Image 1 (cartoon, rainbow, N blue to C red):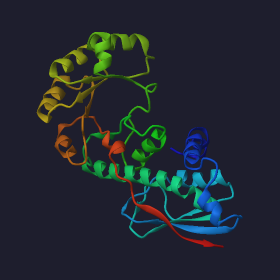
Image 2: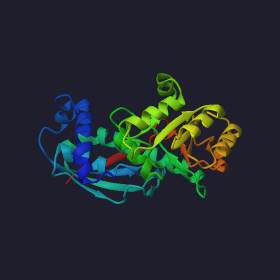
Image 3: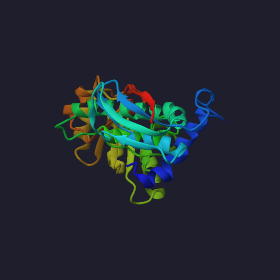
Length: 284
């Protein structure tokens, strides 16, 4: 989770990059209307129902610009929020409130949108044995934020990056010369604590993956009927993951299959933002 330690170790440099992208050397607009420091406050207001996520990141944007900035939250990550709800009050130098506004909102809107979309999809799996997973289809340099938002929304994280686990996809299999060869090579190379996941597209590939000792077998872009046959073929000898263009609109057809995991890139690459704004700036 994004606690103080992980924020300083992992997130701060990414937030600073975002701030540098938005402020090359000065905020011309703010410096024009606010040449001197002045204490002020601004309200953070929700404009759309959803699940809030990214509040620590939102606050960190302002605190990196000025450690004296204070954010008084009226909710916490994971809470359902409503249109018109006051989420927070930010107090500090008005110049900081103005200059940090867009970057802070970009993070909060994006992360809350992912959490809201993930929550809606996870609800469709409620009561089943299936765990909802994200993918590596994330915005460059925003993976830590987007995968955190998935968890806040009720989903779970697949591997974080290429160093985090073994997944043998079609091109890995082609490079190795086949599924059996790829699994054998992965077992020889990877630490013994790593599970080995293999992507399959046909029942023949599923059979080969089972016989070669795969720990997790991904059923990629198969019809529900083919996946049902594949699950029966696996017979509990490996964990199962369903993947391939899974969205909120079509996930219901997969619920009754009984797969262990369903992964969906849409959680991060297709979630719309949650509309949130900063209003009522005033001097204090």
